[in-house]
Length: 359
Image (cartoon, rainbow, N blue to C red):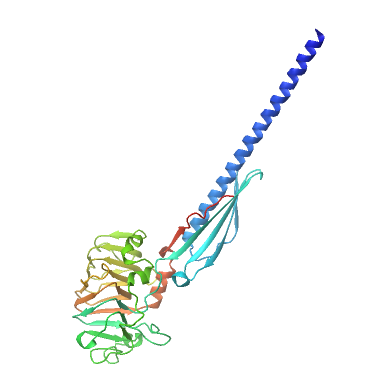
């Protein structure tokens, strides 16, 4: 009898010890699982933080940072970037690393992925006026040249894929100094009487697709740039000096009297998609204007000028363009165009597919 009781007590003790050990193992597994989930969450938070910083500062190097979140854990983030030759050397491939650690330091997870940051413009326009096909002018169009558009110290006013006969056009081109001092007519580069080297027409190297040349997207894929627009509108009544970034107009655009669109610090890229552009008296656009027509369209984009008006920056016609009515001045401005390129709001960040890993 005593032996039986002793065996029962021993068996009970073994069961209790085994149960305690099983419970301890379960608790450890649960704790490890919880720590891993916490570390994963910390790494995910760091990853989102990095993507947000890159979006705000697409051209800046981000230094290594360690952030502690009380009661949860911490994450350490850093990046390695490579400047590529695409987009004229502006595009960056960025490896982002985020390491999350649980509060008790027993678990850590590293999350890595690649993203690219790139500007909306692949190439900057080199002339105040770029036209793929024909050019018609029945008013006075004044072009103020890019002083280095055709090379160092070589001005460029018009770059076009078609041959230009200046004797049939109301075209006047000059340098910035002459324009600022009202000497354009007295000392022009080109006009009805002569066509100088500041007009480059029908060159062998002229791009077949102007839209692709500027944005790295074929004209048939214009919708991809449309998706990146800061605003999409059907008319231009709402545009003013605080308008900036990529503004896409589906249809005709008419600027009201004394309206200024964009500023030197925050220029606009105004895309007129298969519509006309009408200037009223003393209206002005600061930035880039793209007159976008279907590829190889035989219909010219129309620009109507109902009073003295100006574009400071550049105008690009993807096909043909026709200017009507009163005078218009297009003044090339390097600062404005560079400001558009450098503005972080005019850059985009995209994740590289299949580059994400957490091991």
